[in-house]
Image 1: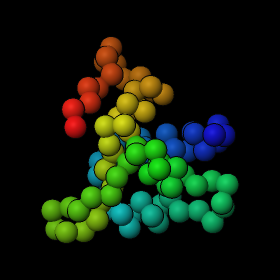
Image 2: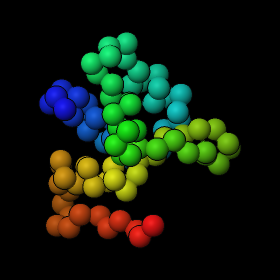
Image 3: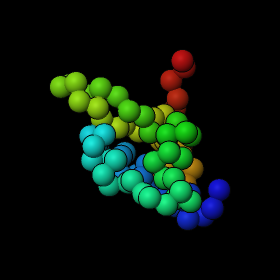
Length: 88
């Protein structure tokens, strides 16, 4: 994985982590016509973000537990421990 895409995936996950985003907003903001920069697809394939149904039935994008760990691993918050993953 190139550093460029890794950095962009991190940006996307951080952006979604701030608040759930509508699927339309994410798609409009992060779409690309460049097949070498598949940021949205990469984040989804890795399970860092997920599409869910919001309260009104509209599709939203949220960060996953894997996404939280990805953020912790790449930009450590003030906490000294990584977030815990709930058992599935």
